[in-house]
Amino acid sequence: MMKVGILTSGGDCQSLNAAMYGMVRGLYQNAKDKIEIYGIKEGYTGLIEGKYEKMKETDFEHILKQGGTILGSSRQPFKKINDVYKNGKTKIQCMIENYKKMELNCLVVLGGNGSHKTANLLREKGLNIITLPKTIDNDIYGTDMTFGFSSAIDRATEYMDNLKSTAVSHNRVFIVEVMGNKTGWLTLNAGIATGADVILIPEIPYDVKKVKEHINKKLRENRKGILVAVAEGILTLEESKLSKKDFKEKRAREEISDSAQNLEKQLRGQIEFEVRMSVIGHIQRGGNPSAYDRILASRLGVEGAELILKKQFGYMVAIQDGKIKKCPLQDVAGRKKIINTEDEILRQAEMLGICLGR
Ligand code: F6P
Image (cartoon, rainbow, N blue to C red):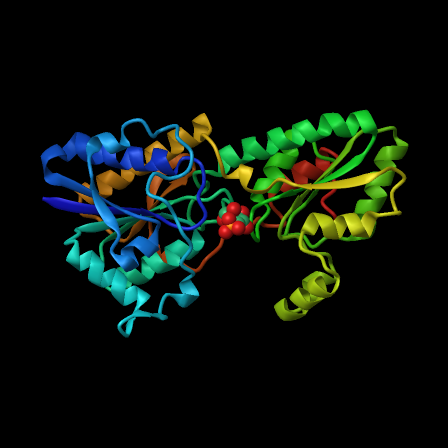
């Protein structure tokens, strides 16, 4: 009998369930009587605390299109993974102990960057690990795309499309803040999809003067309803030179909590029309996955099942150049995929007349 534990870790995203559906289906279709699946509750927290349940094949039957995660999720920051949790044991020790207590042959982790660091540490400690790359941020090294990303682009695009129509009616400038943590993949793609006039991403610290000039030029050309898509992690040129501590202090002093709010303040009185801001927030992660995400997650999941059946552990299942590949966990952990400032998509965005703040 092969015992497989599954957990979903970190911020949720669309198609976590689809990935589990793909994985479980791949396992049962090909080794029905030799597989036992254990659903570990609320991410690594469940593994630390020993919260899990034996799952049935039918538990995964109709979840392909369902948002969220049927197992629940939580954040267990990697930097605290060696903190003492209970009875003098660290969190990582508790995880290993529970893995052994459950007599697992493999642990499947659906997670983002932080979760991959923990997964790799568990691998180094001798556990059999397979991971699947999830996040709306698309910032996991080793895969061209993460699942959740496509659905979040659709969600952010729809939101901005809706803002655009009211922006046009009122001749307003709308600053829209998109998620993405420290990377601009989501903002850039949703911004292009919605025909934004300005797109600001963390990889390119922005020059406020350039943004202002671009908007005023568009307004002089009679452009109606300007849309400025900004990633939550953007920095001005000046801010990009500050240490993390100084940056935090500056934002606290200025009572600024959002990047969009910061830009709105900088543009106030500098633009001929009214400037408004809006933060999209967690709806980007919620609801049913896009068809693309369902397919990608199913493919990654089923390929993960194949690796488990072949007893090939220590890999993240990735998509590279349209093909599903296995990527060693040690190559993924601790690295982030950011947008290269020379990337062709940035040049193409600029050729479309979009200002990137540079
Ligand atoms: O990593 C996904 C993500 O949605 C980021 O884009 C965002 O910065 C973060 O999670 C928000 O996390 P939380 O839901 O814990 O506030």
